[in-house]
Image 1 (cartoon, rainbow, N blue to C red):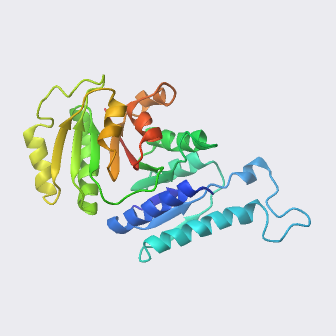
Image 2 (cartoon, rainbow, N blue to C red):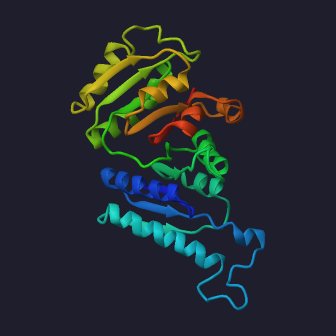
Image 3 (cartoon, helix red, strand yellow):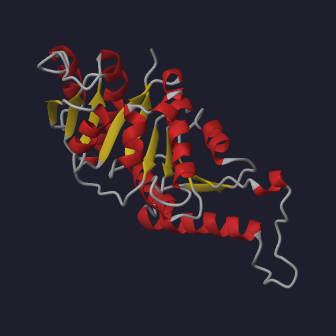
Amino acid sequence: MSSVVVGVDDSEASLRAVEWAAAEAERRGRPLEIVHAFIWPLLKAPLGPAPGAPPEGGLRHAAERVVATALDRARAVAPGIEVTTDMPEGDPLNALLRRSHQAGLLVVGSRGLGEVGGLLLSSVGARLGVVAHCPVVVVREPATPRGPVVAGIAGHGESEALLPFAFAHAARTGNDLVLAHVGPDGSADPSPTGLPEETLTKWQELFPSVTTVQKSLTGHPGKALMHAASAASLLVVGSHHRRELSALVHGSVSQAVLHHATCPVAIVQVHR
Protein backbone atom coordinates (compact mmCIF):
# COMPACT_ATOMS: atom_id res chain seq x y z
CA MET A 1 0.00 0.00 0.00
CA SER A 2 1.58 3.28 -1.11
CA SER A 3 1.93 5.65 1.82
CA VAL A 4 1.97 9.40 2.23
CA VAL A 5 5.48 10.38 3.35
CA VAL A 6 6.20 13.68 5.12
CA GLY A 7 9.66 15.05 5.82
CA VAL A 8 10.04 17.01 9.05
CA ASP A 9 12.57 19.23 10.80
CA ASP A 10 12.23 21.45 13.86
CA SER A 11 10.27 24.22 12.10
CA GLU A 12 6.62 25.18 12.41
CA ALA A 13 6.42 24.95 8.61
CA SER A 14 7.20 21.25 8.75
CA LEU A 15 4.49 20.73 11.38
CA ARG A 16 2.01 22.39 9.03
CA ALA A 17 3.20 19.89 6.42
CA VAL A 18 2.56 17.07 8.89
CA GLU A 19 -1.00 18.29 9.45
CA TRP A 20 -1.65 18.51 5.72
CA ALA A 21 -0.08 15.09 5.09
CA ALA A 22 -2.07 13.44 7.90
CA ALA A 23 -5.33 14.83 6.55
CA GLU A 24 -4.42 13.69 3.04
CA ALA A 25 -3.47 10.23 4.25
CA GLU A 26 -6.85 9.98 5.94
CA ARG A 27 -8.62 11.11 2.76
CA ARG A 28 -6.72 8.54 0.72
CA GLY A 29 -7.11 5.75 3.23
CA ARG A 30 -3.33 5.30 3.27
CA PRO A 31 -0.74 5.10 6.06
CA LEU A 32 1.46 8.07 6.92
CA GLU A 33 5.22 7.85 7.37
CA ILE A 34 7.04 10.65 9.20
CA VAL A 35 10.71 10.96 8.20
CA HIS A 36 13.35 13.05 9.95
CA ALA A 37 16.76 12.77 8.32
CA PHE A 38 19.47 12.54 10.98
CA ILE A 39 22.62 13.80 9.31
CA TRP A 40 24.79 14.36 12.39
CA PRO A 41 26.29 10.83 12.61
CA LEU A 42 27.70 11.28 9.09
CA LEU A 43 29.36 14.50 10.24
CA LYS A 44 30.96 12.71 13.21
CA ALA A 45 29.25 15.09 15.62
CA PRO A 46 28.80 13.96 19.26
CA LEU A 47 25.20 12.78 19.61
CA GLY A 48 24.81 12.60 23.37
CA PRO A 49 24.47 15.39 25.93
CA ALA A 50 27.49 17.52 26.65
CA PRO A 51 29.37 16.87 29.91
CA GLY A 52 27.34 18.24 32.77
CA ALA A 53 24.26 18.81 30.60
CA PRO A 54 20.86 17.25 31.40
CA PRO A 55 20.54 13.63 30.25
CA GLU A 56 17.76 14.58 27.86
CA GLY A 57 20.12 16.90 25.96
CA GLY A 58 22.16 16.14 22.87
CA LEU A 59 21.50 15.92 19.15
CA ARG A 60 19.89 12.47 19.16
CA HIS A 61 17.37 13.37 21.84
CA ALA A 62 16.62 16.61 20.00
CA ALA A 63 15.93 14.66 16.82
CA GLU A 64 13.71 12.23 18.72
CA ARG A 65 11.71 15.17 20.09
CA VAL A 66 11.21 16.48 16.55
CA VAL A 67 9.76 13.13 15.52
CA ALA A 68 7.63 12.83 18.68
CA THR A 69 6.17 16.31 18.18
CA ALA A 70 5.34 15.53 14.55
CA LEU A 71 3.72 12.25 15.58
CA ASP A 72 1.53 14.02 18.16
CA ARG A 73 0.49 16.61 15.55
CA ALA A 74 -0.43 13.89 13.02
CA ARG A 75 -2.50 11.93 15.55
CA ALA A 76 -4.33 15.08 16.59
CA VAL A 77 -5.40 15.69 12.98
CA ALA A 78 -6.16 12.10 11.96
CA PRO A 79 -6.30 9.79 14.98
CA GLY A 80 -7.53 6.82 12.96
CA ILE A 81 -4.71 6.48 10.44
CA GLU A 82 -1.68 4.23 10.68
CA VAL A 83 1.45 6.29 11.37
CA THR A 84 5.06 5.14 11.37
CA THR A 85 8.23 7.15 11.99
CA ASP A 86 11.79 6.84 10.80
CA MET A 87 15.02 8.68 11.53
CA PRO A 88 17.40 7.58 8.74
CA GLU A 89 21.00 8.71 8.71
CA GLY A 90 21.60 11.05 5.79
CA ASP A 91 20.52 14.35 4.28
CA PRO A 92 16.81 15.16 3.81
CA LEU A 93 16.84 15.21 0.01
CA ASN A 94 18.30 11.74 -0.43
CA ALA A 95 16.26 10.25 2.41
CA LEU A 96 13.00 11.45 0.85
CA LEU A 97 14.10 10.70 -2.71
CA ARG A 98 14.65 7.04 -1.78
CA ARG A 99 11.13 6.86 -0.40
CA SER A 100 9.62 8.41 -3.50
CA HIS A 101 10.07 5.11 -5.34
CA GLN A 102 7.35 3.48 -3.22
CA ALA A 103 5.39 6.46 -1.85
CA GLY A 104 2.16 7.71 -3.33
CA LEU A 105 2.96 11.27 -2.26
CA LEU A 106 5.80 13.23 -0.63
CA VAL A 107 5.00 16.24 1.57
CA VAL A 108 7.48 18.79 2.91
CA GLY A 109 7.29 22.17 4.59
CA SER A 110 9.04 25.34 3.54
CA ARG A 111 9.67 28.50 5.51
CA GLY A 112 9.83 30.43 2.25
CA LEU A 113 12.58 32.67 0.98
CA GLY A 114 11.95 35.47 3.45
CA GLU A 115 13.23 33.70 6.55
CA VAL A 116 16.61 32.49 7.70
CA GLY A 117 17.18 28.97 6.40
CA GLY A 118 14.26 29.27 4.02
CA LEU A 119 16.33 28.96 0.87
CA LEU A 120 17.80 25.65 2.00
CA LEU A 121 14.46 24.19 3.02
CA SER A 122 12.74 25.46 -0.10
CA SER A 123 15.46 23.96 -2.25
CA VAL A 124 14.71 20.49 -0.83
CA GLY A 125 11.12 20.76 -2.01
CA ALA A 126 12.25 22.30 -5.30
CA ARG A 127 14.74 19.52 -5.99
CA LEU A 128 12.25 16.83 -5.00
CA GLY A 129 9.75 18.33 -7.42
CA VAL A 130 12.25 17.76 -10.21
CA VAL A 131 13.73 14.36 -9.35
CA ALA A 132 11.16 12.55 -7.17
CA HIS A 133 9.37 9.50 -8.54
CA CYS A 134 5.97 10.56 -7.16
CA PRO A 135 4.08 13.85 -6.78
CA VAL A 136 5.42 16.29 -4.17
CA VAL A 137 3.41 18.77 -2.09
CA VAL A 138 5.14 21.76 -0.47
CA VAL A 139 3.31 23.45 2.40
CA ARG A 140 4.47 26.94 3.37
CA GLU A 141 1.55 28.83 4.91
CA PRO A 142 -1.28 27.54 7.14
CA ALA A 143 -3.50 25.66 4.70
CA THR A 144 -7.26 25.94 4.30
CA PRO A 145 -9.18 22.80 3.32
CA ARG A 146 -11.84 24.87 1.53
CA GLY A 147 -11.23 26.63 -1.74
CA PRO A 148 -10.80 25.51 -5.33
CA VAL A 149 -8.06 23.22 -6.54
CA VAL A 150 -6.23 25.14 -9.29
CA ALA A 151 -4.28 23.22 -11.93
CA GLY A 152 -1.89 25.23 -14.09
CA ILE A 153 -1.85 23.62 -17.53
CA ALA A 154 0.43 24.47 -20.46
CA GLY A 155 -0.29 22.13 -23.35
CA HIS A 156 -1.81 18.70 -23.91
CA GLY A 157 1.13 16.73 -22.49
CA GLU A 158 0.90 18.60 -19.22
CA SER A 159 -2.84 18.04 -18.92
CA GLU A 160 -2.33 14.28 -19.31
CA ALA A 161 -0.07 14.31 -16.26
CA LEU A 162 -1.91 16.81 -14.06
CA LEU A 163 -5.56 15.92 -14.61
CA PRO A 164 -5.56 12.55 -12.77
CA PHE A 165 -4.00 14.13 -9.69
CA ALA A 166 -6.06 17.33 -9.77
CA PHE A 167 -9.44 15.67 -10.34
CA ALA A 168 -8.81 13.03 -7.67
CA HIS A 169 -7.77 15.61 -5.08
CA ALA A 170 -10.75 17.85 -5.85
CA ALA A 171 -13.07 14.85 -5.49
CA ARG A 172 -11.53 13.80 -2.16
CA THR A 173 -11.79 17.30 -0.71
CA GLY A 174 -15.15 18.24 -2.21
CA ASN A 175 -13.71 21.35 -3.85
CA ASP A 176 -14.20 22.81 -7.32
CA LEU A 177 -11.45 22.38 -9.89
CA VAL A 178 -10.13 25.34 -11.89
CA LEU A 179 -8.15 24.42 -15.01
CA ALA A 180 -5.96 27.45 -15.63
CA HIS A 181 -4.46 27.50 -19.11
CA VAL A 182 -1.42 29.62 -19.91
CA GLY A 183 1.16 29.55 -22.67
CA PRO A 184 4.82 28.96 -21.77
CA ASP A 185 5.68 32.52 -22.82
CA GLY A 186 2.84 34.09 -20.87
CA SER A 187 0.45 34.20 -23.81
CA ALA A 188 -3.07 32.93 -23.43
CA ASP A 189 -3.78 29.34 -24.35
CA PRO A 190 -4.31 29.40 -28.13
CA SER A 191 -7.42 27.25 -27.78
CA PRO A 192 -10.30 29.43 -26.53
CA THR A 193 -11.98 26.44 -24.91
CA GLY A 194 -8.88 25.05 -23.19
CA LEU A 195 -8.97 21.25 -23.08
CA PRO A 196 -10.45 19.29 -25.98
CA GLU A 197 -14.09 18.53 -25.19
CA GLU A 198 -13.57 14.77 -25.30
CA THR A 199 -10.72 14.99 -22.78
CA LEU A 200 -12.70 17.10 -20.33
CA THR A 201 -15.78 14.90 -20.74
CA LYS A 202 -13.76 11.79 -19.94
CA TRP A 203 -12.53 13.20 -16.63
CA GLN A 204 -15.91 14.66 -15.71
CA GLU A 205 -17.45 11.22 -16.20
CA LEU A 206 -14.78 9.65 -14.00
CA PHE A 207 -15.29 12.31 -11.29
CA PRO A 208 -18.94 13.44 -11.62
CA SER A 209 -18.92 15.17 -8.22
CA VAL A 210 -16.25 17.68 -9.30
CA THR A 211 -17.42 21.03 -10.65
CA THR A 212 -14.93 22.15 -13.31
CA VAL A 213 -14.15 25.66 -14.53
CA GLN A 214 -11.69 26.53 -17.29
CA LYS A 215 -9.79 29.82 -17.39
CA SER A 216 -7.35 31.21 -19.92
CA LEU A 217 -4.63 33.28 -18.23
CA THR A 218 -2.36 35.96 -19.65
CA GLY A 219 0.79 37.59 -18.37
CA HIS A 220 3.77 36.03 -16.62
CA PRO A 221 2.78 32.36 -16.08
CA GLY A 222 3.96 32.19 -12.45
CA LYS A 223 2.33 35.45 -11.41
CA ALA A 224 -0.87 34.62 -13.30
CA LEU A 225 -1.14 31.25 -11.59
CA MET A 226 -0.46 32.69 -8.15
CA HIS A 227 -3.20 35.26 -8.72
CA ALA A 228 -5.61 32.55 -9.90
CA ALA A 229 -4.76 30.48 -6.81
CA SER A 230 -5.01 33.31 -4.27
CA ALA A 231 -8.01 31.64 -2.60
CA ALA A 232 -7.14 28.05 -3.53
CA SER A 233 -6.75 25.08 -1.23
CA LEU A 234 -4.10 23.60 -3.54
CA LEU A 235 -2.19 24.70 -6.64
CA VAL A 236 -1.09 21.89 -8.97
CA VAL A 237 1.76 22.48 -11.43
CA GLY A 238 3.92 20.32 -13.66
CA SER A 239 7.63 19.63 -13.47
CA HIS A 240 9.59 18.62 -16.55
CA HIS A 241 12.45 16.78 -14.84
CA ARG A 242 15.77 17.35 -16.64
CA ARG A 243 14.58 20.48 -18.33
CA GLU A 244 13.92 22.01 -14.92
CA LEU A 245 17.25 21.21 -13.32
CA SER A 246 18.54 24.48 -14.73
CA ALA A 247 15.28 26.13 -13.67
CA LEU A 248 16.32 25.71 -10.04
CA VAL A 249 18.80 28.47 -10.79
CA HIS A 250 17.22 30.33 -13.69
CA GLY A 251 13.59 30.11 -12.67
CA SER A 252 10.48 28.36 -14.01
CA VAL A 253 6.74 28.40 -13.47
CA SER A 254 6.77 25.61 -10.89
CA GLN A 255 9.78 27.10 -9.08
CA ALA A 256 8.21 30.56 -9.00
CA VAL A 257 4.94 29.40 -7.48
CA LEU A 258 6.75 27.03 -5.14
CA HIS A 259 8.56 29.89 -3.42
CA HIS A 260 5.78 32.47 -3.41
CA ALA A 261 2.33 30.85 -3.49
CA THR A 262 0.34 31.19 -0.27
CA CYS A 263 -1.45 27.84 -0.65
CA PRO A 264 0.15 24.38 -0.71
CA VAL A 265 1.71 23.54 -4.09
CA ALA A 266 1.61 20.08 -5.66
CA ILE A 267 4.33 19.33 -8.20
CA VAL A 268 3.47 16.52 -10.61
CA GLN A 269 6.15 15.08 -12.88
CA VAL A 270 5.48 15.49 -16.61
CA HIS A 271 7.22 12.89 -18.78
CA ARG A 272 7.85 13.86 -22.39
